[in-house]
Length: 287
Length: 272
Image: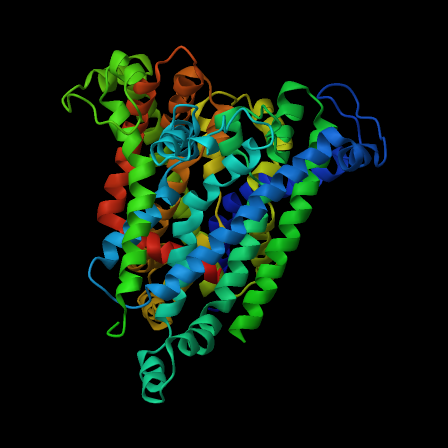
């Protein structure tokens, strides 16, 4: 539309508050964080410039490299999660009776908040909880463990909760992508005598390849930001601390704001890379 | 599918049963058990009485869940209204007008998807603190009121389907830009507003990080109240289970009636 005086007033009036919000709560903080990350700022006094010390500490001190290793567990469980969701979406492709209920039950975990999910899984992993009860009753008592106390098992155990929590989300995304394949394609394949396996390989898999890639990147940026489950279930104890739990601890309990800023920037970099790849990929898929 | 085999059917139902029975059932059982029953029975044993509502009543009274629910409603109501209104305004202006700096503004909104909330709170907390808003409802309302890029995309979709001739005809009739937006465009954007309302409503209701950081005692949201309850080791676990079941109810209701918006939102997450 042409610009007139009244349209300029409208544009300014409608944009001013959202843009101020954007600058004050997103851009100013992230830029300040970059600057703070090179200092030893402790919340009061003047910050002193200490170069890359914070970053060096984070990337070499075993206490802090552990944070990133813990994230690897969350990325690792994303593999079976995506494979199962991918396989299931191919298996159930098409309309059938009870489809709504089926999608519903799978998506519910995704809609529950971290506190609810944590409670459910404390019941599940407790020493006399659901998992051990089931193992005992089917004669696999030897496999029971103190899942949340065993330092070797606690991280894979709580990371695997993500499978339950996000499986449905992945499934719905794959399932949606498969629905965009025209039914005639499958009919033509059937007429040409394709086996079910060939059908999957040449029609279904190419149809969801893009969505799969996007989901992998979503899992990576999600893993680096893991907070709720280890914080609520374990309060970061037994070696379950993640970068975001550590940011909160350093910034708000220890007043080590410079250090927390450096850790924030490391998380930010991982997110930028994975979300960046995702949008590049999206653009390519659209062309 | 006509060629579907029995095997696929079986796989499907095994999935359903596993996901549901072993995880949700123990929680439901537990919420109806008495304290003595909880410590003497296994997690997969049903409670003696399904009419034992003591745990629910106790949770509501001691966990101050009623107050927390009121806080949540206030916070959600105000922040979602502001956020959605702002999203329609920003989208309308960016979609319908050409002006200097438009590209830059669009880029600024787009790039926020690279800045997760968790990476900025060290500084944002200081800003909220200097504004004197820590531990007030206004702090989280303010943080939740920003315009997100997903919302802008959803609005752009619907704006493309509203013919520009409509705006121009109204303009020739002497309507001001503000009344075109308020009387013509905004009512037509309603379906997109509903989608955004559901998506962000669920997201905000479920958010734990922000309210846990900014809100104390009297002003905490339902989700944080559940957590405080749970973190207090003196609280018997059957009571926690009852509280958690209460927390699932709002989500259950939204889900039952509005699930198509949720699926639409998930599909949108892929595209944006």
